Image (cartoon, rainbow, N blue to C red; front, side, top):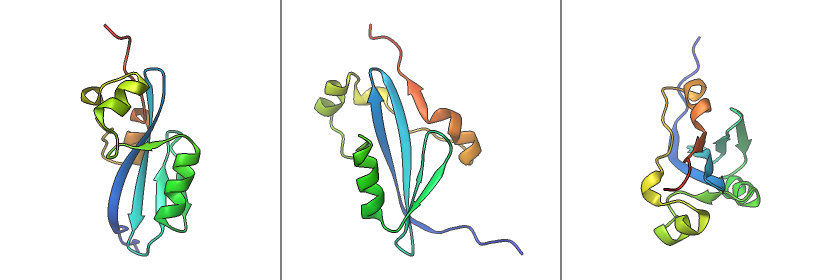
Length: 106
């Protein structure tokens, strides 16, 4: 018997940066209120709540992509126009896109 596809009530992208390298993390909140973070190593970390997952991301110096404005991005060394959360058909295809090098500044 196949397990049903998990239902997510929200999906958020988070990022951390080192110079012009961006490391992405995807936070999904499930209907039951638990949360999952897919990280750049291809791991899916499960948390008891969205608040716990957010706290863990912030402790690791990640910031919410949706909460980032142009001034915040420029302080990190890049422009918002350079950033697009990675896409992929499934987590295996997404994994290699979770670390993004923005290259040298012109």
